[in-house]
Image 1 (cartoon, helix red, strand yellow):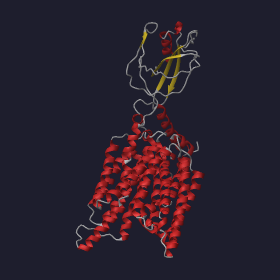
Image 2 (cartoon, helix red, strand yellow; image 1 turned 120 degrees about the vertical axis):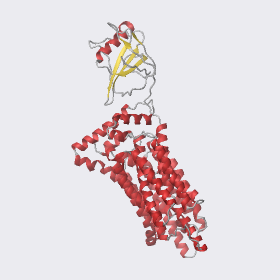
Image 3 (cartoon, helix red, strand yellow; image 1 turned 60 degrees about the vertical axis):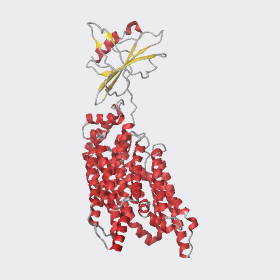
Image 4 (tube, one colour; image 1 turned 90 degrees about the horizontal axis):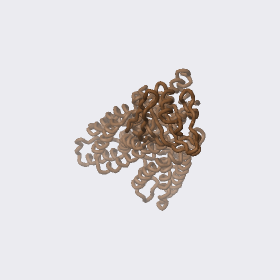
Length: 590
């Protein structure tokens, strides 16, 4: 009649105080369930054999499955009775979705004239526990996108230095062949136009994700790599402006889609860790650019960076689309295969797939019945939280410091090499990101955000105070070189707090807080806020410094961090260990 599957799972002790588990069958539901129960009753030898049959009926939108369990009671237990419909009088019903697995051995019940002649059973072990290996491999493949973004982020510093060095050499030799001249103002645009491009990329990325997360990554990787190849052969500084804008545009899309992809394919236990992997690879990219840029000129460095998006394209080509997106567009069979790929071939994915489908259907139903309410109100809370965190993150001074690290240390260090301080900060940033991947899913998002804001505000206030103290003494002709460790310590504390808290978690919450059908729009808004804040903070740092002094600028950033602490305590929820569907229901007020 059908394939059977045996699984030695626990049985309810209510059946018998001293029962012995024997067999558990799983098979597709027949049309007439009562006939099958009668056959198993007679064939199983319930009369006089002391065998008790229990049944479980499971029905989902993908499959309907009956689970029959047969238990041998201990000695002295009377045989159980069967009712007129052929069912055991002690049937227990539970909800345990079963996904059909490929049987290793087939078992059939052969019907005779009055009752089955023989029933044989074979072993096919399955597990409901997901495997992490596919999710980890997917995260490593996606991390090539942030790696490319980090390479681009770190490109401007060595590239501008290389351009200026070649220009100075050409001035001394009088040979300007293949030399691009660059002014200080042009250099500032080379450094910042990628952020402006990222602003528009964030706006476009949310719309593009309607065509699929995987497809957008594949398509964006091509112009991303091409922008760096064009930089290699740039004939004038205006071409570098254009390629910087295009590179930033593609960078924002890749970062946003990668984060959403991770949030949709990772289980709750490791979602935060895998999200932190993206940030870690971004920091690795910056370090590689700084290190390699010390030995290569700006054209050669651009050639190296162009390889990263190409490797991303090849890696993503072997990965499936996310199950959530496939369910969203009505491709449920593909969604089941995708989810099985990410959870492992032996994992039970029926329950999770049903949750995803019900979440999508509920969202569509709410939008149809209350189009005005759920068109905006359902995402208002996530928008305020994620965009607010992005504003506080960008105006905390991190971007300004990364852009002007050497010049800032040059103003505050008496005898220490400012480049050594910048390198130390970069390594600490990477190590902190590695540690954050472990703490996000163990400590939780909210405690890390609170601790991050507290230590950031203290470190920034301390740095500003030292800058004021140093400025006063320098005006009197004194140099306090013996206290060089104070600004370095403050910056290291700030870097650790920033890299372990608000930096990775603000991006992680984009994929966690927005409902599935609005995740693209929400990601676009939050990403746009992020890059707009980054562009403004980098451009206004010099103005702040001229108006308030270096100490005043850092005191301002400290005040922003205090404001972020109040915002986090009042508005940001804890999402540790929660399913996306649970958080979506909460944000929609259902």
